Amino acid sequence: MKITDLKELGQIIKQTRKTTGLSQYELALSAGVGIRSIVELENGSRNTGIKNVIKICNLLGLSLNIN
Image 1 (spheres, rainbow, N blue to C red):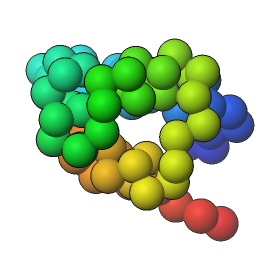
Image 2: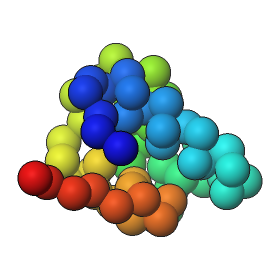
Image 3: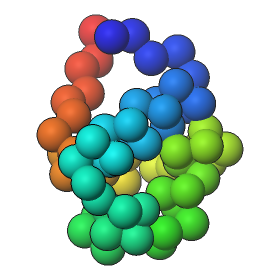
């Protein structure tokens, strides 16, 4: 799947988080980021650093591919 903007990435992260049964708080705690970072990332309103995006995706079993 090709992601074209932050809002799309946030929707995928939110959907996957809900599917795995994690709360935003639990995901934030596991990723070592603030809950506000998760909320804003899921809403597509925050340009989160790539390091945190990679951690969050890994925790959710998502992979990032760069072509």
